[in-house]
Image (cartoon, rainbow, N blue to C red; front, side, top):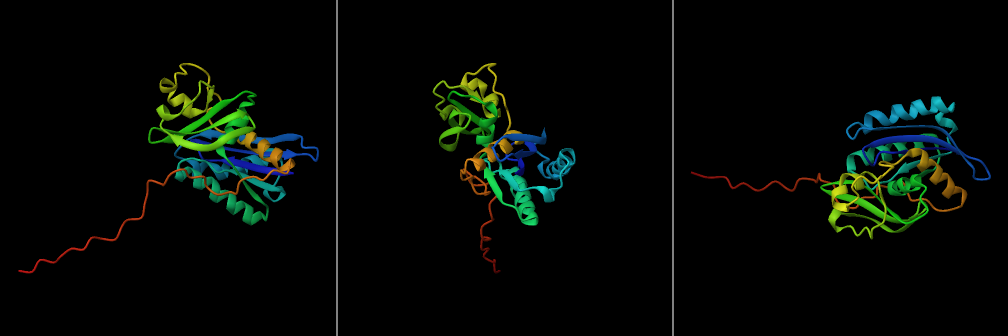
Length: 225
């Protein structure tokens, strides 16, 4: 099974092509990533095109699409989701969602409990607690750093790095900082091989976007002389 995975829910634009054999073994065919919070729309499509060349495959060879569903800032997140839906529709292949924090956690390969965090802006973090790199306990949340009960567990992700002074992590390592599509592809293929249900490819929003529709214009009483 040949799968294209990508994520734009953080400042990173990351994509990968992975393949699984019938026995579930995983092979990474190609991957790439860059960190630029303002150029998701410019970088994603060229990155995918470059990866197909490096992997020696055509888009028509893909069997599945996996896309990061966040949580993340609205503008970046919708770039990845719109691209995933367009590709899946054009190719006639299934499209699956992967929670961005799950991909970040999977890349750690940790076997003990920890917290994964990404920047949520507004001086907040998106976070979740994990028993190990494969097992999330509870739902993903968004809070101010001081409100997060870390239970003195190890922290990973850019959210932990940004607020190291609050969490008291000092110079402790918080790698990986951003999700890696290579890990996302491996995680998605592993879950599919196990027969597990992946999330629908819909955005995981934990709060309303900043932009809202304007209200009705106020009535202005005309002054008559």
